[in-house]
Length: 148
Image (cartoon, rainbow, N blue to C red; front, side):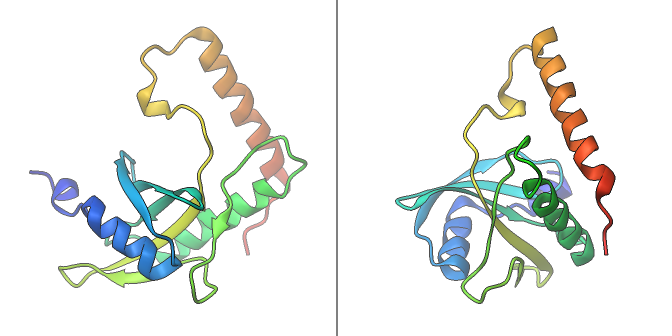
């Protein structure tokens, strides 16, 4: 078993976290992620993505991600981005201790409907061109970005 798999949180834990930190009762489904542990949360209020960092993640990196998302989201509407949801204390990022005693950072975002890239069976030329165009839009928007 890899270190990554050994450090997973189960879906029940994700449901407890989203309820405890955000006051949202919902059902969690794990979604593969490269860096974070990701869970789609379905509730009567809507759908969300709960992101839990790996234990060694720098909090400044988490803040950087949120800042970029907010910056792109405030652009002229060319790109739809998830909205960062504040926790019950009004913070964008929560910190928790896992069962090994390591700190993890938790964030909640609105869910955007669509197909997950990881579920695409065939990467067609049209799909790749579409990805390239959207990436170019983000790059153009970020030309004016200056991280504090």
